Length: 87
Image 1 (tube, rainbow, N blue to C red):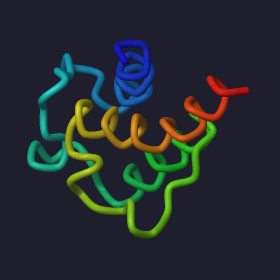
Image 2 (tube, rainbow, N blue to C red):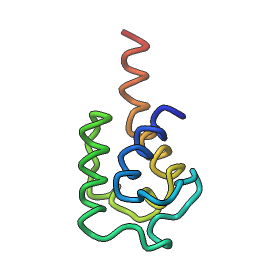
Image 3 (cartoon, rainbow, N blue to C red):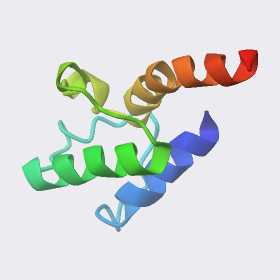
């Protein structure tokens, strides 16, 4: 879990150079994210974690904080992790 958050934080730190992002910081409310960065973030998450973010996943609540993004990843990765555990 921490490793996933650290990867996301590292990606976002390229855009928030002068701010130490915390797990609970709402990056939208803080004004750090515009529509282009939101698209880049979704693309990063899909590529980095080999997931597909569906239309129904495109809700601000899934992307506001590092904790929210990690929860989304946990939900998306859980079926694959369960499948590999039973193989």
